[in-house]
Image (cartoon, rainbow over all chains, first blue to last red; front, side):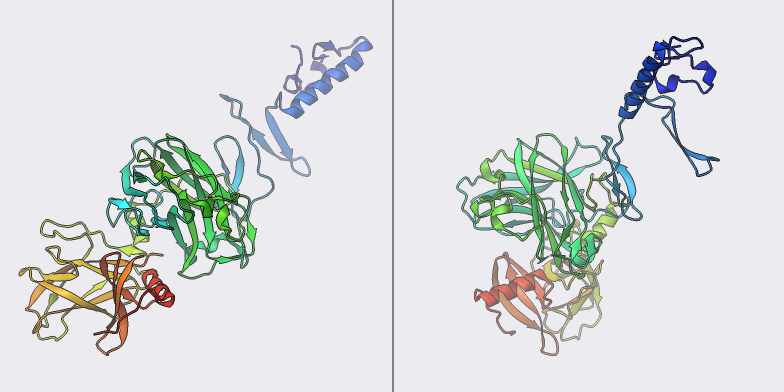
Length: 460
Length: 57
């Protein structure tokens, strides 16, 4: 057999009687020597460039008594090139692939997603709200807020949509324009935001004044091709802002943004808002007239925050759906979306910021809220009260809203049997763990169970 | 955040312990915690001169 590549060579020297068909057997022609060397050099070049391979790469120890060997499977279905990372990773990191052969170092899987409710499963406040666009706030899916600048005519519906065409996901956050705004004032903006607490961000630090690289990934689709920007802005520090443009298509696709390591940054180790992630969906000149800052964290320049984006308010046909939002340490590639261990786990994480959402039962026609019940056995008290310990210790002392008693009367609780409503006049000793309400009555309450629904809001 | 009214609420000892506010057309009890976003906004609007917190009844 002609020996045309290294793997054709024989370990027994006497069996190697040709090189690429040029005889090197006993009695070979003298002219065959240089031709054989040239042929052999071409074999080495093919090996060096990866045109031909070897069966096993053997890396011997110092005395050549043993070796570490790397080997391909016995049957390889398609050529695959693995590109190694540029240098070593940090201690404890693991090697991951982007699915296209590029390998990278990344933190070990598990508890790596800094985003809460990234799969859009938890919606304690409700699953759909219409005519949004005038007031900032949290309206549907937990931990995701909308914010606006100067008054805009644009309005939209925000909902938890059902996903049927993206493996691994059943829900998304959907924004659906219902009123257009094509006369965009300079100060207008519409952003979908996720605000992160300092306590949860300490892993981003490289030092007290610098941050490691981190990577955002999310799935999105739109009714038509749509340019949006993602942005990170730290609350403190000198270098605090960076954006990236994305063109969202009409089918689900994954989009990523890597924020390089940076100096002159600051992340306080407390319960305050330290980092805001924004999806820019509509903006005026104030935010679009510059050049998008997509190189590195830098001081915030308003004009560089969202140049190049389109407007979700351009047409009532416009929709945008987002799910699978993940933020993790590392320069990418993004790792697969880390689903919560369970819906219950994700709900608990959300309840650090907001508690409510007990669905109304058959006898309750009021707003959804966490339920509290208590038997009032002190009918002679001058200040009848009802107490509740929150399900989860809150980020801060929450704002308490008395949603209703049984029949939906706002700011009231009610006797379970009598149905009588009692107006809540104050809360006492507010804390992150406990709420006590005082309610108005004359001469105390009869000995009965009282029922009420409340929400506790400690959002950022 | 549209805050249309704000009034201190006192505890049994007569100390202010929260604010009864109407925010975005909804009545809320806002604690005096600077880390609470509603209280922070109330303080911002008071400083800007666009909101006054009424004394407790």
